[in-house]
Length: 131
Image (cartoon, rainbow, N blue to C red; front, side):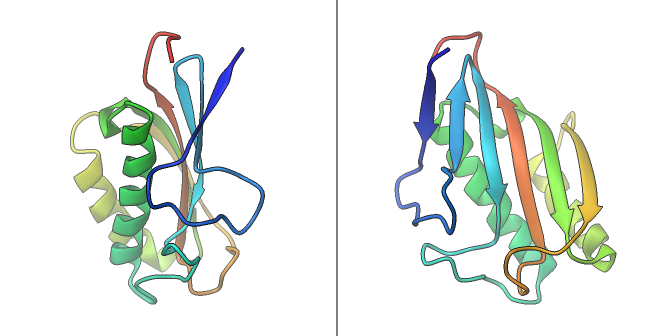
């Protein structure tokens, strides 16, 4: 099955060997997305809501570059560094997914940079097999 690499315009260079997204058979897999700027600096240090908004905007950019919308997101993996940020994350999450919500899970863990409070990876069903 052919696959297409998805890199939104203006994306920075990843810290590790991966791409922002891969589209295969109408399914987009969005890599774990952290609250980084183009130079891999953490943005909005200490602000879980702002970091969540930034991460979801980055994911939205990958989804739209692949030809989809946030309504096409079917699954999210959410990683938090502290459960105390759970309510803040959910407030912003509800803005990006106002109708039927995607399936998801959420775990507490350490992230690649200590100032990053959240990471989200997504699965998005965009088409019916055409790319």
